[in-house]
Length: 268
Image (cartoon, rainbow, N blue to C red):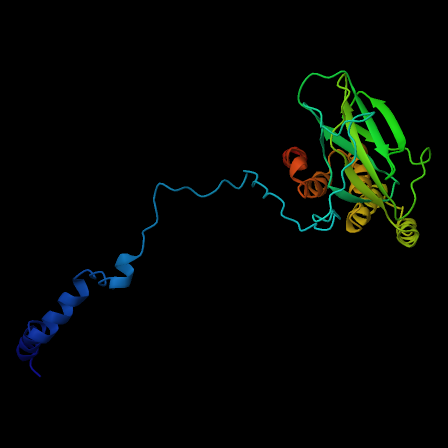
């Protein structure tokens, strides 16, 4: 083909309609795809929202552990006992609030009794009686708690006892709550289980004992064991959380549960 003819063919091809459209398509910027109706209705992310700071410590949830079984009380029967150290059944006002189930199981290895009172007082008296109203414990105290010395007082397996607190100088005591001493068989089983806990790690041993008493729903003993463990290992948050879960089972002890959760938040 002659050079003049070849040049004419090239010019004609470059200006043809087909190639013009193709070239324009290559140069024209892409148009965004039309959003579907579903895409248009979806909420757009808020540009003002910020991602959580990884350095911020997440807030722990309130414990909701199911520890039912601490209260043995039968709501259909409510035996009344005297609250005056000599006769009247009228409750004192103001009165101590006993922090325990209405009727709790009792072992006695580390039994911790506690109560609360808002207002001026000159001390307390912890009183424990049997079903015949015989006083077995009459203990003057300055603090609103007491670790019971069971070596000084023998409680019989299967028997029910009553405890109440007198706020001095008021002569009246609070309405009583009950505790029932567990059977000999259960006492032996618990003692055997405690003896089998490994002692190579003192902390793990203390925590395991407290958990064992919790599993048996021994209110006073479990709390006493956790009190001992926390006194020795105050920086272990799981101890506060476990004790908080126990306190949360009784409405009057909810403030103590919240206090323990707050302390767990501050633990290392």
